[in-house]
Length: 283
Image (cartoon, rainbow, N blue to C red; front, side, top):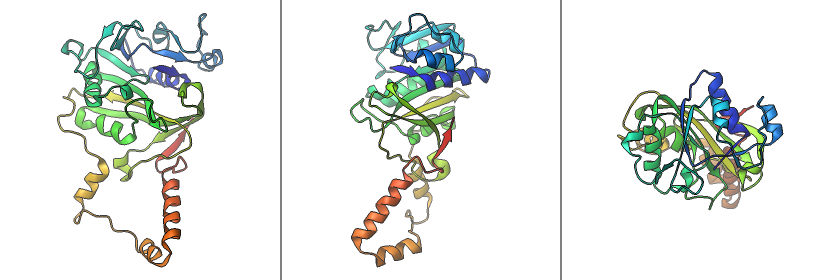
């Protein structure tokens, strides 16, 4: 569980928009993976006791103006103030108590993700924000799960009282992603809007970073989310997508070996960060 340069920059963007974060809940006690140069780039003073991966609890007060920070964890080995297993529902006394819930990489380690997500959603006040940074690609074995845009957009939806404020993907050079993120960040499209599965195949590990705003108080998952491309297919008259006539003719004319290679290349291109319908560069 750790926060990086781009995570902290996202927090600064919150504050610049006028968002207030008096009470903050973090999933686990957060470590910070920033160098002295990173602090200077962000216009922040360099902590005296700075080391990579250190706990900087007072940092939240300076970056987002937090007056009270509560760390939630299954155990107290890292000094969390609130002991709770996220596989189980959050006790009602914590519902609607926090201006922000920050997950720097915990949810992928929790088996019962729907319960954990609903607890995060319930913990927020109306107007509060959820921040999550979780594995999206090439990190098999890091936790139970890797996440994608379909999950975030369907969970943090109007149906559940939320709106996705931003969703982006960023690659790292190493399996321990905090050791070397690339400078490029990409805003990720909503599969329901582009009416396609927003997939990613690439050579590097990738993390998804989401910011979602709680706009109204609703009971999470009154209806279970459904994958948007299936909803579109079910709405079609015959339930099937017909291939284009050109593709059908090519498939009939070309040898199978050539057709499969061409189709495979097209799919790889479609599922790459070069696809500007899915991924738009951010700076």
